[in-house]
Image (cartoon, rainbow, N blue to C red):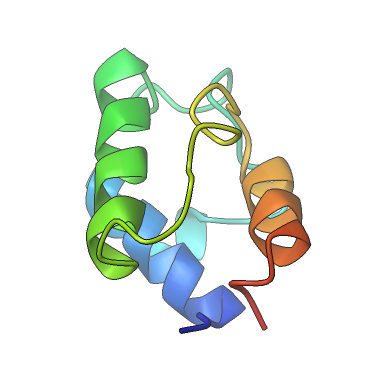
Length: 80
């Protein structure tokens, strides 16, 4: 299963309870109050649900910006 960039943006927006339009290349935890440790957990949990636990998300668990999450998902071939 692969997800599109739009799907990833929707997942992150829902996890952080923000608008999809707020999820940009420059989004990171320093610029967004909602992206705290709970927000980070919510993103990982949402991605885990999306992939039904079939991918190792440990590499993304400490990433605190959108661009690197996207890069890592592409690296493990689950993103278009």
